[in-house]
Length: 231
Image (cartoon, rainbow, N blue to C red):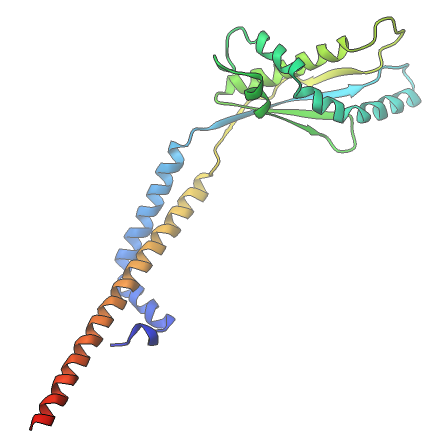
């Protein structure tokens, strides 16, 4: 028998090949566990509202260009406004049916909202998440509506023209479900773990068996030497 110190990767490969049924069962079992764990994950639903910030002006090329530049300058302001207490508290008040949750708070809503500006434009996306499809779409549409109202109310009274305005391009998209781990990832990870556990167990058992065998061989040799000395 080879001692663990003299075993090579080829020897370990032979061990796994001899016990391929055990390895196969472990891999399939690991894949099954991965599938079950992924199926038990609670899905998260995502929706989004698309809004554009503009400064209204006369119908001319120059005015349109100035409006676009003004809208881009307001993007960061709109991002901060989306997560402000002024907007979030209005969203909660508007949710009379408690679709967003019976105990939802402004902090809860803020954790479920992300604002993404569209590159080189005055458009930004308000991405929302929820435990249900209705909660995600409701939050997205309510955010777009309440932001539009807040921006209009923030305009100074007595001014001859509106300085900035929000236009809702898409109130909410159909909510899509997703989980933290995809089915392919879960099954692949489970199979890899199963293979690793089987390999460690088989190689470890072989190493222990070799050590025991080496110890017995050494004991027999020692007895033979003692017997020769006595004779």
